[in-house]
Amino acid sequence: MLNAYLDISNRNTCHYINQTRQIQILRVQTTSNECIERAIFPENDFAFDAPSDAQLEIYTYAIATSVLSDRISCQRLMRR
Image 1 (cartoon, rainbow, N blue to C red):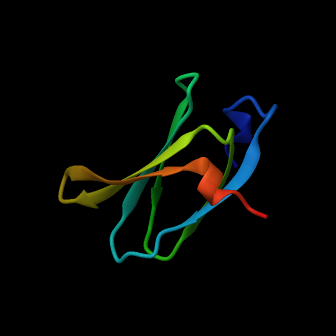
Image 2 (image 1 turned 135 degrees about the vertical axis):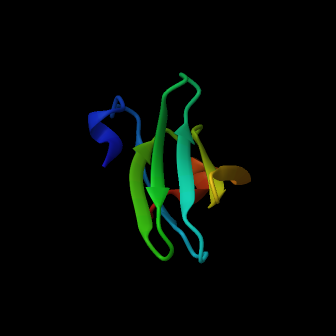
Image 3 (image 1 turned 30 degrees about the vertical axis):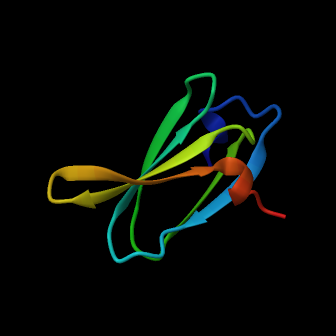
């Protein structure tokens, strides 16, 4: 998990699954300018801790280029 990199106070566990057939680059962006990136292969999942105001940016990888595909609030990805 990303807890080793991010301050874990006031964090929520979030979960994202790559449901595409492409490699995705995920970037967790917080308001305090913390940023962590991970490559996620098709049908793999990604669990991480982040404040509810953080953003998960999803980039689709295609031959040496990545394109921002989506931006999701981490509040929507919280585990319940």
